[in-house]
Length: 119
Image 1: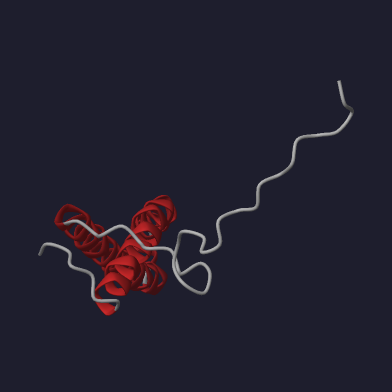
Image 2 (image 1 turned 180 degrees about the horizontal axis):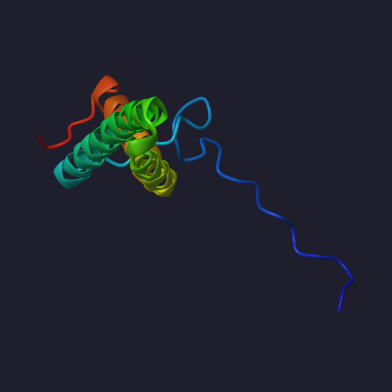
């Protein structure tokens, strides 16, 4: 038995694939359900953020009212309750907002690239 390896065959010269090398990857089309959920998540995040702003303003008003008179000290506790609610809602806002931004960005990128997604 000879100690030589068998001859290697050269690859066929035009290699299959796009001319000039590799092209950019093709993104899968965005479905109508994906678009719908992107909008739902975005609006839920907007609504929650606006409620948090209203709660912050209300807590400041309650603190001012509690500071005005000794008999209205209970309003300060209501303001503290609103601050705890804002602190508890912050992770929920992040959990809604970050995926909504990513999904909306992907939908807009698909529209900009001329995707043939079903509306």
